[in-house]
Length: 195
Image (tube, rainbow, N blue to C red):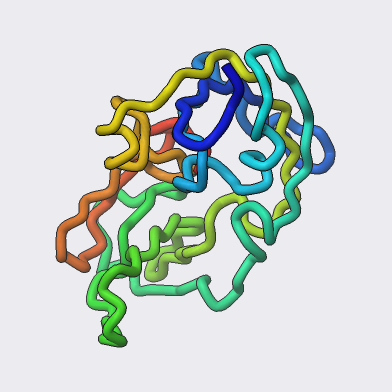
């Protein structure tokens, strides 16, 4: 069977930076629904389209093809009193507490995830950029398995039992309307995964 739209692909991969420093090399394969369902990066999908089990390749993604350029506007300094204790570098929050929410009518936009990058006596530095923003990334990929997707998987836009993949980000975000800065990940918590 070849990889085509509406096939479920099991993919072994290794992610490195442009200097070949390993960022991630998981023990288990990434499983995604092929065909534009945002299960992986478009450039990787294009590379894999029409390939068989056992296909192996390396590919480089520039920042614009992966997690985007680093945006200094997403760096915030907030009063430490707004955050729960204990507060550690590496903790992640959905939104910023008491942040003014602009109502621009786009309710589908996901709230930003901020990572604590520095903690001082009275202030906290937060970064809303993806941890891999601004980086060129190199992927080594190997196709481990291919199967036809079920109707339910196609309707849900992802393989059964598979979560969305997002390197360096939490696996499961709360879809609630609460805009408070509840911690969603502790340092060393969920392992980074691909989106």
